Amino acid sequence: MEKRTFTNILITLVVLALIPIGVGVFIYLQNQYIDWHETYTTESKEPYNNYMIFNLLKEYKPKKEFVFIDNLLTEKLAEEEIKDAKNTMSYVFVGSSPFLLKKEIDSLMSFVKKGNSAFFMASRVPDSLFILLNLNSQDYDYLYDSLISTNLTNSVLHNEPNFIFNYRKKRKSVPKNWSYFEGINTGKTNQYQELGYIYKETAIQKHNNYESQYTDSDAYQNENIEEESINNDNKKKHTNFIRVKHGEGYFYFHKNPILFTNYYLIQEDGKKYAERVLSYIPEGNILWDERSHFRKYQKRDRTPSPLSYILSQPSLAWGYYTLLVSALLFVIFRGKRMQRIIPILRKEENTSLEFTKTVGQLYYLQKDHKRLSQLKIRLFFDYIRTHYHMNTQHIDDDFRKKLSERSGIKKETIELLLTDIQKINGQNEVSEWLLRKIHTQIQEFYKNCK
Image 1 (cartoon, one colour):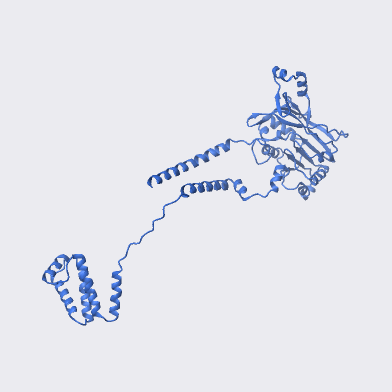
Image 2 (tube, one colour):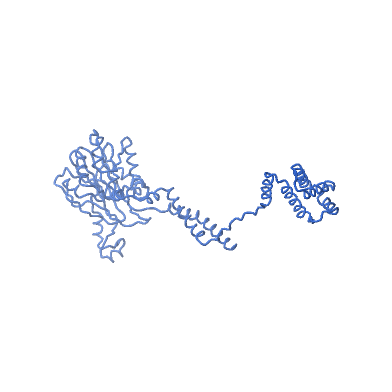
């Protein structure tokens, strides 16, 4: 039993020691982990999110108000503050693809027609919006490469040399699809304008779900690709940033929203490029669209479970994990069969004295002094037998002498007590006075004896 107890204590101490170590390792790994998914949220500081561009716009337009669109665009644009605004405003969306309903697109068209602006930094936008703008349906063409070169057509905003950006994931340079506009010609030349373009920086091509990179002469020989065709492909300019006039306002479309995420804005060239693109945003308040991100819209439609809310709050999450660990420890150490609890046994009480007192009170109330005095005498002799181990059947001088020696009471006092006892035993009735006297003598004996 002792060995098992020692083992349980040892296991408990080991588990308790491992818990803080495990928590420390978890926190360390959590801090080391970087999420490279392109989620485009303003709250996150992970590489491909919108935290920095959101704050960059605030710094760029410090005196302007930022309006968050977290409900239907139709409802927001119908508000009096926006609908009847005297100054122009700019709608901004930065993400992979906006999720816009038909009535929202119609509201946005009316919004821009009044002289406002709409900026879409998205790799895909609804085709219905392009058709309403009298543009051909956009083709989803792209350049496949890890490095991309980009610039702006405006001579004031143009940069020499071109801006070169590298796409990375998990700290490795990997190829990516860089979208651009193709086949969106329009007969109204004053309506459509190219503002920016991209080049393919290296000779990476995509062939039926596998990549091949041509860098040296060996690559050219293996793939049989002529150097001239590769150079021509790299030098080909592809439009990735356009402006479309609609009524009194403008629509702006940029096909590479990833260039405006945190990863590129912490770079000097990335911030410079973003500032030049954002310079097209006119003076006025900015309507920042957070609702139209497709993933976020789907999350809004789902009813969150209580557990998802608990895990979303750090303090509640740690409390929940602690509860699970505690329950596991309880099952391990308390789930096995335990020894039955030993009941507490009460100490036996001597009730003879209480019984005697009760009987004595009964005799006293009945005025039976004889029986009451005999009861006291019987208890007195029982005390002598128990404490002094003397025989009380024969009371003589030798008995009186030994009792005096053993109890420490004078022989004359003992003789007087024993004489009164003999007197009580020889009478048929005992007076109350004699009863009180014998009671006093016996109590004095108890008090003074040793």
